[in-house]
Length: 501
Image 1 (cartoon, one colour):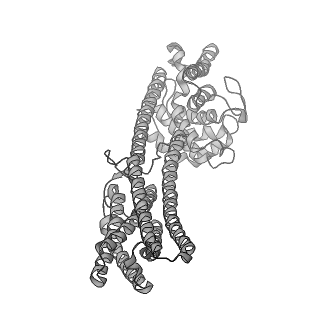
Image 2 (tube, rainbow, N blue to C red):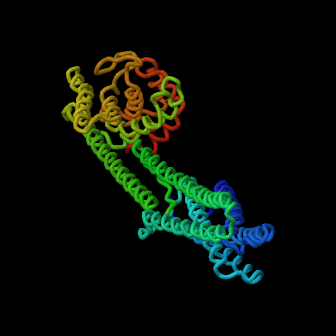
Image 3 (tube, rainbow, N blue to C red):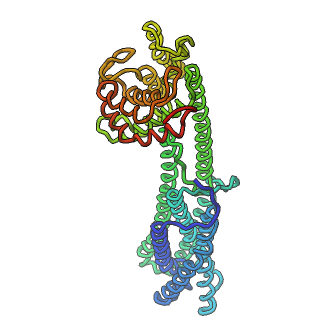
């Protein structure tokens, strides 16, 4: 995610929709003014329809062209945080400018009074407010789509103008202009009714009602359009927020909310993203602490067995290599998803944690263990499982501790059932235990121990192949053969001193 206040451009789809919406506003305003002018101003009413409509058409075409020229410079090349505000004022300014052109032309050409121009200005200002708000909302949607695709955000100004005040101001403006327009219509009609003969009063009243109905429908249409447009924005903002929060609650800390407005929603989205960033950083720190603790505990167990922390690093990497090969095997595909592979990698170092419960006399004995001593040594699998089960009881059940417990307890089981502690056979041995069995044996063979010298990779490979179907799962042995170059590379990169490869 990138915080920006710089120049940006909207996606092509948003621009096309935006221009189409602008065209509709200009056409609607053009039609309304053709009818409105004669209803509120007797001077405009004295003009023929061709002259009045030609003047309006010329003015709106010039306004549209001017807008097309100013839009890139005034809005699109402006900082994202101010684009919506600039869009609003650009639209208002253009409508006011067009009203002034009409007023000036009528004054010069027909010697119309200023009052006639003020009526046109009121109508254009009203239509301009509706157009400006609607196109500003459209700009917000365009920015949202752009930022959602690019991952960029704006940094909203904490001193934004509140939505509640915007609503109050807009509502007041609509009410005042609406009342003003209705007043102008009624004033003209009252003057007209005074000159209507008695026999024509009923038709005149119907004409007046028709004019008022026309004004009401025009206002209602604009208001409904604004409600729908703002509803789309609200739905977009809430959907972005809720979708992101749902994604985060599911564990995706890479999610973010597009910040595309300088208001309460923009600030809400901005602080949501900051919260996610902090949560991601805290989670990363916690994971690093967890990994360091795991390695420390595992290293403690290994050093008591005359081994080094390199054994831990090698075995967890062997397991990762085996998983990468087996994840496409039909027998393992459902189990070895990316999350499980990561958990196996992280929990593998705890496979011999139970050795902390075995005495040094047995762990460090240079010769072969007696049967009694070997029985005691076998208990390290039980000690490891019990220790991890206690941690699970305290911390609550989770996949990491479950896999770690499986590995610690079952990594000495053999495919033919001759292993320990339970003598499990075949698929009854957890996959995690089968993976660690081969990884642990391979590393024990290529490493120097107090009771043996290090074996070469070729000799170790031969022992593992002879154990296929007896000690090891046949498919895991096949995976080892496929990835044996990776095993050799890991063994070399993380080799102990005096270890022969």
